[in-house]
Length: 84
Image (tube, rainbow, N blue to C red; front, side):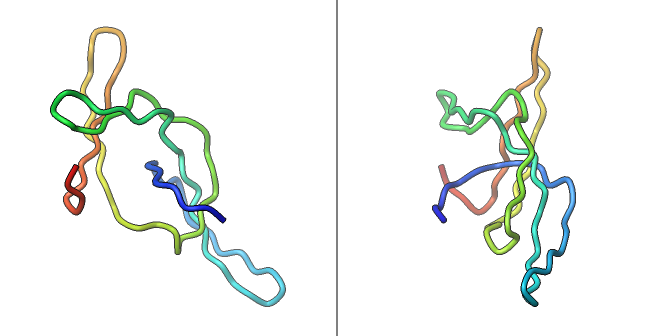
């Protein structure tokens, strides 16, 4: 396993049992590409693929603030626990 910081929207949770061990997973729609603007705010313009993530690997809850532009949308990440 490797550690990486990803952001995404949780679709649902599930419990999986294998060899008498239960583990809980979240089905997460990851963001495609994280960017920073001149004010050092993190944003992205679209969601990417779905992926299972073990719940123990989820660190914190963040919010997404949608800003509509002319031909696309930007989503800014609202994270009260992290200083960028």
